Image (cartoon, rainbow over all chains, first blue to last red; front, side, top):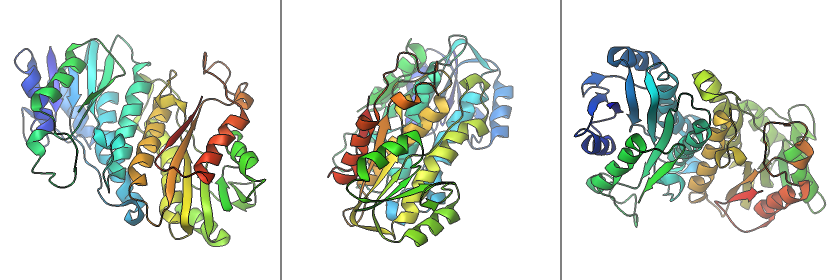
Length: 199
Length: 199
């Protein structure tokens, strides 16, 4: 398979690279790294990326961020960061990707733990995650030509333990291998409309 | 209690009015109907509504709509309709409402069935519902002064059977009373961070 992995240099995206690159042609995409550069917050950049790469069998997206701060001190614009920086770029990767994905191909989004196991200040990200999970379920029933769509929703990675120290007290930390298996199942498996929870 | 019900003239909002108006002071809010008029897609209109009504014990919101159409024919702007017309107005009602809600008060949002039991063409609404459900869980842990936040997520109402004829094949239709009980539990109960599913 020819597989685009957006956010390949990030901790989460790297698990997909590790899981899939031994068996497939993986094209690593990053904003300023990887095999191809694209800013997926910019639709024109997404289009240029697809034109450069051409037809593919799978698109994996493991990027996005939201606002962190308690809800009673949050502005509407801050709330929308989760939507604009995590949800919408993944949606646009799909909407712009229909002309480039082969029959029976797949799109795999990434959500996260915060809409099932919240932390203080995480409501913007929780909303984005919930939107991604809901969209995947809703979109799966529409998909043409046997194309599948799923999301991977991982707990905090073991390798990110230091980065998020103190924010996720009591949360399990998951291995790169466990998260990579979820991306493998999403890309190489047969299911659609699934949220593959790793925890 | 003094309770604002936004979307009181709609089929869903009316169930909250029926359930709560016998025991409480209910202020019905609509875009062009009710006791107070407000367009909750306009933050200035939300602010004017709160200034006019003053302090309250509960805010219920039962409005919102999304784009309906299959995902491979959907534009990014169409996708965002669910976010802009269903999610964001409810978020803004909360963010602008902190100065007007009494200690121990509550906010009750409305999501819906499409992010757990999808129909063709419903991915924009499914994303909005998922975002609302995720946000409620995430925001509940932040809420100050004993303020609660929940969502009611109803199946299609019996009274809306004709309106949505053919779109929700096989879905259960629920009574006004059943949906009203969920709003009652959200407003008059003790839980927070809950999605009260009615199906």
